[in-house]
Image (tube, rainbow, N blue to C red; front, side):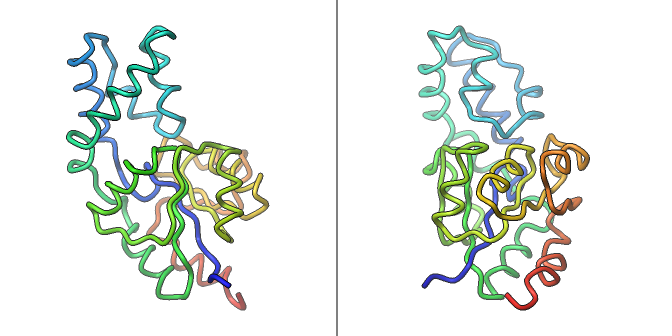
Amino acid sequence: MSAPAVGFDLDMTLIDSRPGIRAAYRALSERTGVYVDADLAVTRLGPPLRTELGQWFPADQVEDAVTTYRGLYPDYAITPSVPTVGAVAALTFVREHGFRVVVVTSKLGRLAALHLDHLGLAYDELAGDLFAEGKATAITEHGVRWYVGDHTADMIAARTAGVPGIGVATGPCSPAELIEAGADHVLDDLTSLPELLAKITVGT
C-alpha cells in the first residue's frame, strides 16, 4: 500500500507564478491583438484558464486563445516563476517524514510539470486540469490526507474529498475567506506548514 500523501495546489501555493504568467499574457496580447490586463489577471489566479480568458476574448475565440496561450507558456512563464516562501522546506519535511507529495492543480499537467521540474520541486504524483470539486477525485485516488491550497476552491476540493483543508494566505483569498470556505487551518505561508503537520500527524 502506498504511503499517505499531502496534497498541494500549485499556483500561489507552491510557486509564485505571477511574473511568468504576466509575461505569457502580455505575449498573448501581442500575438492576438486582444488586450489582456496582465497585472489584473495575475491577482486572481486559481480558476481555470478559460475563466480568465473569457473576460477578454469573445466566447467564440476563447478556445483558440487557450491553445495560443498554452503554446506560448513554456517560453514565457517557466523561468520567471519562483517557489513561494517556505515551499522547498515544506516539501522536504513532507517527504522526510514518510509522506508522498501529490500536486493537484487547475493548470494543465504538462505545464505544471515544467514548473516543478525547473524549480527542482520533488513530487510523487501530479494531477492537472482540475478545479474546485473536480480536484476531489484526484485527492481521493492518490491517498491525500491533507490538501494545501491558497484559494477558496481548494478548500471546497478538500471538503468534497472529505479531508482537512490547509489554507495558505499567499494567493488571492484572505484568511477569512479560506475559513469561510471550510479551511481547517490557515497559515500565512508554507513556512509554518512543517510545524503544523508535526502536530496533526502525530500517531499517523
